[in-house]
Length: 164
Ligand SMILES: Nc1ncnc2c1ncn2[C@@H]1O[C@H](COP(=O)(O)OP(=O)(O)OP(=O)(O)O)[C@@H](O)[C@H]1O
Ligand SMILES: [Mg+2]
Image (cartoon, rainbow, N blue to C red; front, side, top):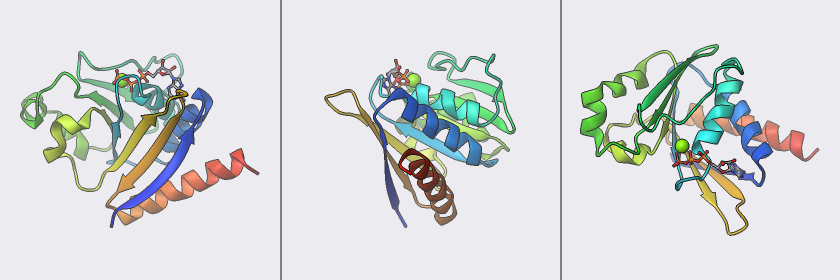
């Protein structure tokens, strides 16, 4: 079943709050695919996910577009990937990065559309779009019921805190 949820990221603060919320509920083996144009906020969201995962604040989370993958130690490992500079899934396989999807960490992938055919079915996709006022919206999709419930609960909690 395809689930869809929408979350407004009007300010940077909203993006940070969402990222921390995601990091808080992440479980080993989760795969999060981030979609959105250049500058949409994929790396910014991942920086907050790292904080939610307990990656210490002195560990700077930077864009891995040249190295393709950065690894950080939090409560569980964070594998932050960026496929922007890759051609297709063959490149991901050659580099051995698809093996990380099935390890005991959280994988967050920017530009995962480059390798759509090797992404695990049980992933969560987050599409960030930017409107003309530079405000962002995040839309969530997953085919996995348990993931959908876990994320829905977290999003509901964040919205309650925001709008008591
Ligand atoms: N609500 C918001 N959420 C996220 N980023 C925002 C927001 N408002 C402004 N920004 C700014 O937009 C920029 C987003 O850059 P970021 O590197 O996160 O984008 P990206 O999607 O990772 O781009 P790329 O495809 O080049 O990797 C940052 O400079 C950030 O400060
Ligand atoms: Mg980026």
